[in-house]
Image 1: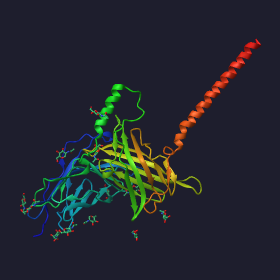
Image 2: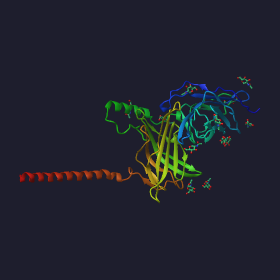
Image 3: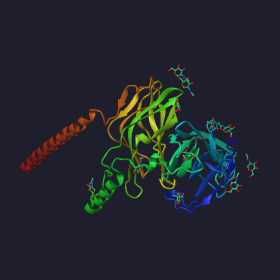
Image 4: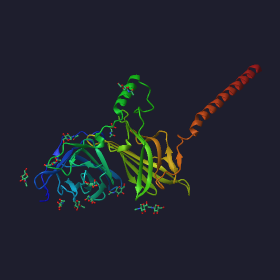
Amino acid sequence: MGPRRSAASSCGRLLLPLLLLGFSGFFQSYAVEVDIKDASNATCLYADWMMRFLIKYESNSGDYKTTTLNLSSSVTHNGSVCGNDTQAALVAVQFGEGHSWSINITKNNETYQGDFITLTYNTNDTAVFPDAKRKGPITVLVRDPSRPIQLNTVFVCHNSFVIEAENTTQIFWNVTMQAFVQNGTVSKKESRCPADTPTSEPTVPPTIANVTTASTTTLSPAPTTAPKPVENPVTGNYSLKSGNKTCFLATVGLQLNVSQEKPLLININPKTTVADGACGNTTATLKLNDGNSTLIGFTFAVKNTSASVQKFYLREVNVTLLNRLNGSVISSADNSNLSKWDAFLGSSYMCRKEQTLQINENVQVHTFNLWIQPFLVEANKFATAEECIADSDLNFLIPIAVGVALGFLIILVFISYIIGRRKSRTGYQSV
Ligand SMILES: *[C@@H]1O[C@H](CO)[C@@H](O)[C@H](O)[C@H]1NC(C)=O
Ligand SMILES: *[C@@H]1O[C@H](CO)[C@@H](O)[C@H](O)[C@H]1NC(C)=O
Ligand SMILES: *[C@@H]1O[C@H](CO)[C@@H](O)[C@H](O)[C@H]1NC(C)=O
Ligand SMILES: *[C@@H]1O[C@H](CO)[C@@H](O)[C@H](O)[C@H]1NC(C)=O
Ligand SMILES: *[C@@H]1O[C@H](CO)[C@@H](O)[C@H](O)[C@H]1NC(C)=O
Ligand SMILES: *[C@@H]1O[C@H](CO)[C@@H](O)[C@H](O)[C@H]1NC(C)=O
Ligand SMILES: *[C@@H]1O[C@H](CO)[C@@H](O)[C@H](O)[C@H]1NC(C)=O
Ligand SMILES: *[C@@H]1O[C@H](CO)[C@@H](O)[C@H](O)[C@H]1NC(C)=O
Ligand SMILES: *[C@@H]1O[C@H](CO)[C@@H](O)[C@H](O)[C@H]1NC(C)=O
Ligand SMILES: *[C@@H]1O[C@H](CO)[C@@H](O)[C@H](O)[C@H]1NC(C)=O
Ligand SMILES: *[C@@H]1O[C@H](CO)[C@@H](O)[C@H](O)[C@H]1NC(C)=O
Ligand SMILES: *[C@@H]1O[C@H](CO)[C@@H](O)[C@H](O)[C@H]1NC(C)=O
């Protein structure tokens, strides 16, 4: 008898309302637990997790609003199936006023892996989408970017991680999940997500502690430079494709400065960072998700400097930081009014020295070893680079120029002093 699925589960375990940091106020978080049994009443698929969605939608007045869609207390899991060698496993949940979420999971000899994640949100739900212009269900489909998981191990991720797709940010945390469970017992062997695995590099907190104590004890006059972790961020290589052609190239080391109360520096780890986005003829966007609750988006645009000369420039940067433990938004910053990093269309822009982008009063992005080309990438290679002023040799001339100017000034002052003395002397003589 083939594995028939009879579902038995407890859904919507109510957890204590968690205090949300930042601007979002209070919310209630619910955990979902799905335990699918096969024909012999043995567990074949188990999942217990928490999730939340940030969704951008258009309001009647034509502007875009971002709302938070949380799970409600009553969640059903109709349609969830165990799966086998030929059929994908499916975890499907329905909640609230016509919202649903699902993931199908496939396996091979050694591993299992999410294939597609489907989120359907219903903008007809006026409590979540007040004033929505378009009413009705909207479905977004996104390929699961997570790595394959060893068969007969349970995937565990306590820290939050994020998947972005078409106007939605899907946040997951406190996840325990195993598909293709054998012998009805969820494995004791865990596969941990990258965000849960501490990096071997020296961690940021001790440095911050040291710097903080130093600055409070020595009371130095308003520090002009933020305290830094000892190391600069590792430089990462990111690219976007259109069809099978590379259309966006970026090499950059990224560091965030999130100074809500005290400066906090976060280095983006290229090893865990996934690039996504869209190329275009006049705008291009690179979205980076560090797999550790940090999202950064860069939008470039093309401008005409004269009738025939076109340049590209960095127009917008947005940064979203999530609480690693409960997926709440700590900070969401956007500056869509930038005019940085410009270079002629068809070339690339390079700036090896540290650059600072001010996103809002609390958030800065520092870039290192930057080399970027958002448009007209040919043959997977950077075109000729235009270098920033900070990099160029002209920089060495600035102190010299200042020195020369100062010298002239001193000579000028001296001459006028001599002339002044002479005049006053002649003045005395004439008396
Ligand atoms: C499965 O277990 C439940 C209770 O645990 C029981 O009510 C049900 O009859 C069992 N079904 C089969 C097919 O054994
Ligand atoms: C897999 O599951 C499907 C549907 O439950 C079933 O039709 C099929 O025979 C199964 N295949 C194997 C190899 O067990
Ligand atoms: C599955 O296992 C067979 C033999 O055990 C091997 O030939 C095949 O390459 C494996 N497939 C994958 C995707 O690992
Ligand atoms: C998973 O679901 C997506 C969307 O419904 C579908 O396109 C894809 O074929 C499914 N994958 C498998 C292996 O069934
Ligand atoms: C939206 O809800 C209203 C009532 O609240 C209903 O009349 C309408 O048919 C719904 N529209 C859609 C697309 O579900
Ligand atoms: C997503 O947002 C863009 C504008 O940023 C809008 O043009 C598009 O229609 C939206 N898509 C959906 C599915 O809401
Ligand atoms: C994570 O889940 C466990 C039990 O599954 C629960 O005790 C804990 O409070 C949850 N943590 C958060 C941050 O929700
Ligand atoms: C499941 O049971 C079979 C036989 O009882 C055993 O050989 C196998 O190792 C078990 N698998 C796991 C993952 O415990
Ligand atoms: C996640 O971020 C924290 C804080 O920035 C850091 O300590 C940790 O090493 C990061 N984890 C990974 C896998 O990068
Ligand atoms: C930070 O403080 C610890 C002990 O308090 C010390 O061992 C370490 O060298 C300090 N690091 C720096 C960068 O000053
Ligand atoms: C992908 O690239 C190959 C050459 O490398 C080309 O022949 C093929 O048509 C391309 N496919 C698409 C979908 O662009
Ligand atoms: C973008 O540019 C290409 C080549 O110049 C052209 O074929 C295409 O139609 C343009 N697309 C749009 C949306 O303007």
